[in-house]
Amino acid sequence: MASELGRVIEQVEKDKGIGKEVLIDALESALLMAAKKKFGLEKEIEAHFNEELGEIELFQFKTVVESSANGDTEISHLEAQKLDPDVTVGDSIGVKLDSSEFGRIAAQTAKQVIIQKVRDAERDIIFKEFDVRKGEVVSGVCRRIEKGCLVVDLGRTDAILPAREQIPGEHYRPGDRVMGFLIDVQQTPRGPKIVLSRTCPELLVQLFKQEVPEVNEGIVTIKSAAREPGIRAKIAVSSSDSDVDPVGACVGVKGARVQNVVQELRGEKIDIVPWDENETRFVCNALAPAEVVKVLLDEENHAMEIVVADNQLSLAIGKRGQNVKLASILTGWKLDILSETRMTKRLEDAKTLLMGIEGMNDTLAQSLYHFGFTVEQIVSAEVANLMTVPGFNEEKAKEVKENAAKFVSSGKLAEMATKLNEAARLASAPSKPSSDDVFARLKAEVKAHEERKKSAVATETPDASGTTNAKE
Image (tube, rainbow, N blue to C red; front, top):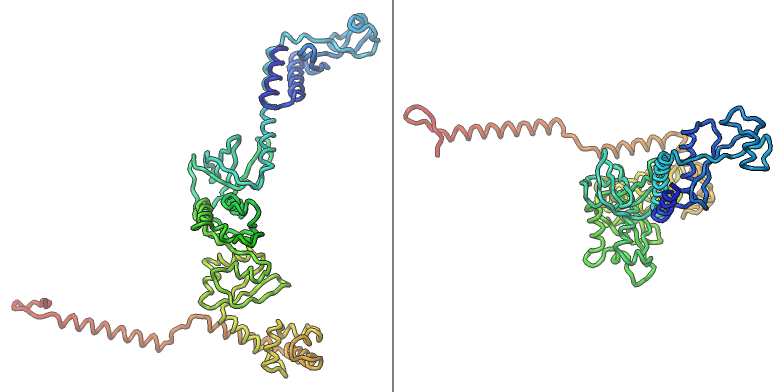
């Protein structure tokens, strides 16, 4: 058995990379379990590996007494002196057990323990290998589909692609190649759990790194990315080299580079946006192909109001709001798209409310609006802040502030705002036809029906038999 164990230890250590100490500990535990199973669990037995003999030795420890009454736990002083001349009464001495008679059981147990240790070691190796690869793109083969979740064979182990991480409308069959972004690696009792994703923006970034050498080399940087998986995506790019166009580098000759990414993402449309340090220009770039007329910035709320021409409104918003949603995610700003007509109406309404303040004229109302003041803000504003508006001195600022407070407290502001909102609602609501219009339309339809009937009768002529036939 010693030679067999020695070969097992050497072979496993060489093939699997498991330390010798781990294997020896496993073998000692295995032999100890077999010994206790044979000799009894109540006995005090220990197992030790003898490197000189190349075997695992078993020792049962007994208490030294003058005269042994229980041979399982005690040993007489006379017998103990044969093993150790210096032993005294009360000492504990180890008696070597003969393990040859249960070698087969020990070998089977050891084999099971070694297999388990090898399996655990392989799981640890796989976990460590993929744990350091988190954030990379991995490729495998679809093995099977379980409740909408793809099991992907990565070679040494399997990964899962949950249904929530799959691109909508994508379908795989066993044997198909699957590429995904490694988002998580977990150690579980059943082994490492590797989770992939095909919907995260990081996959888009990594695919461009693979396709575009300038991105991989760091010349072109992808500043941010946003995706509506399977439908549309946007990436913002910049270049550290003035001679390299970041957008052109990502597009490639005749669009070859970006098309490779599009094909991998199953036809997902990708907009490549030039990044700009100026956040307003960056937002305008992100909303392309829509053309922006004006941008109103609200730094406090980290929001922007984007004004576009009326015929550009649907283009700026995009189908189901995709364009503005992706632009908002890409830039990190909250975006509100307005048409020029709506913006003009808002300006007129705001000026109308400001003109309700006693002593206000058109020029002052225009200035207050462009500086972002509403009637309520005038009431709460400091006089010094109002003095920053062109046309206001300290006296005028105090006067307008007092009149604005009276305008609000009197309830006239709320009444005027209600009327303006109602007028706007009626203007946007579809107009209903009046009763006269409905009657006129019905009258025309009846008249047309009668004329068609007369025409049909006129085309019929009686023949000799008294029946009527239509003229050819």
